[in-house]
Image (cartoon, rainbow, N blue to C red; front, top):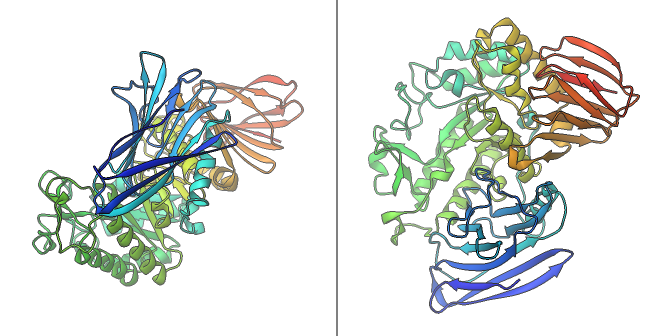
Length: 571
């Protein structure tokens, strides 16, 4: 491949060094300036054959089509958003070219698009897509994996490279981060009430949920959504009263408590708005009613760290849901220099903020739970949080499924959580169960009023939580493989030792390899086709755990009826 360099500062010396090793090309990029300056964006470009390529994979996963060179598919990454990784895949799910960059903090864009003239991909990595701090030297490595291996193995290897060769070590994950949770966002929204929370948690604890996440609304009596009242972070007396007493009551029933904060936002009705009015990011906020604080000012960081530290200590919290970190963004007047800031780089300031939060909270509670959500889920941000959640997708089991699998592929040992599952209580138990069946390979967050569920749905939820807990080690700690990423995944399987959990979403054919296998029918097919399971005993249960059949598989290719959202156990 021939590489071209374009852009950059006028006096920049940018050169490349190539090193090919076992099908992976490491392209080291070195930039040197004659004196410290803010780096201007520059691009490394090359062409790659489209032969055998059929789709794109990147962590955002919104567009699997190939795109054009004049409108490329891209992933835009920085500390607080996604990660620099994009892959070209073959129809069978094998890797053709995986592009990754060693630097996951600097604003970077990876772009690929078809050139109509010769059926090749125009590929590019653009560095410094938004301004950073002045520097004299910069170096990063572009990793081009061209091995013909399953796409998930190429991604796993990239994540391992980030964690080892690049030094991005993730935070430790306490066991409580890997247990089902009751999240109150969809079930309560902002209409929180202390007594109703305790009533709900008593029921959800009995079902097997060990932690409650109290979301937006605890800090304001206003239930009109938005963030106009964020920033002071005091519990509203009408809804919560004394937060410490609520926390203590939850602990007495065996529940942990996580509290939501929108990290950047300060609303116009908060008393802190006037105090920080000169330390806001330009053009970032919520329709003129809330604005984003600028963490490049030490006073902002000290305030936020102090808020979280005192909340965890004084209210006996077990964790924080730190939201909207990806809303820290530079534009407009915020790009201008201000000597009052102790950081000029937004990414450096965010590192300082998150590092201090993580350190101070761990000093109070070494097992503190910190939740982040898409899109702030990259290798660097994983140093500061131990729970990564799929972005909001109420009732959208396809989005939740794809988000869970994508996060599992890129998150190493960090606990991956579903977006909160919910459903219409007038639906069938089978359709409600599909919400759970599509998120099995992550930690379930559940957001329905459990105490108001119809009997069949309540029984279904109890069964699925029990099943998930029984197979938790396999689901979370096993090697996850998946088929047809371009189709929101047609099937997935996690294998640990001699056990496996396979889930079919659209493809009802299951190859059985493990000694013990649970097969979940998350499709609308009413039967599974087993390959290689002759001689194994099986039992089939419906979505509520009631047994519907049992027997022995008699041939190497056999169809066995399994109801939608039902599970087959093979031994």
